[in-house]
Image 1 (cartoon, rainbow, N blue to C red):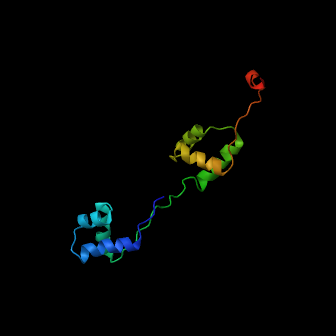
Image 2: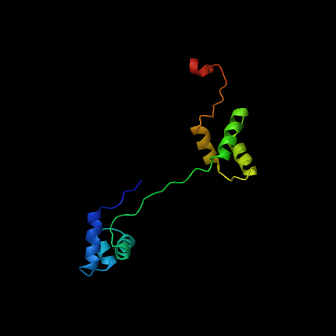
Image 3: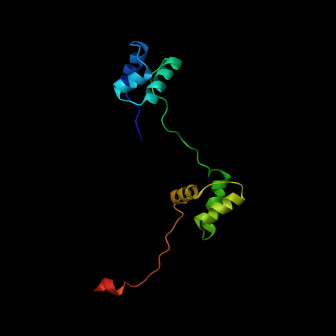
Length: 127
């Protein structure tokens, strides 16, 4: 994940615009940053008086909680299932989720298994 630029660089860019009278475009060229970045920093400074970066990233709450989680746990333990089938069953219950959400849930709860069929080694592997 990308990191925020240093406060020192932010301060130098904003000072070049505010104190030295450079445009955001000129300051961006001098400090080798994107023009939009210089504009954002100057606007943020003018609006809040702060050079500190905002929050990077975020948290997305899980959809499979509460009643849906309990139902899905029971459903997975009562018999065979496919992930695409579970997506369809959840949609029928009024919860729209995608394949990846169900996969992550099943994997985290250790409910998945790999079907393995015993078979003898191939003849070419023995030679």
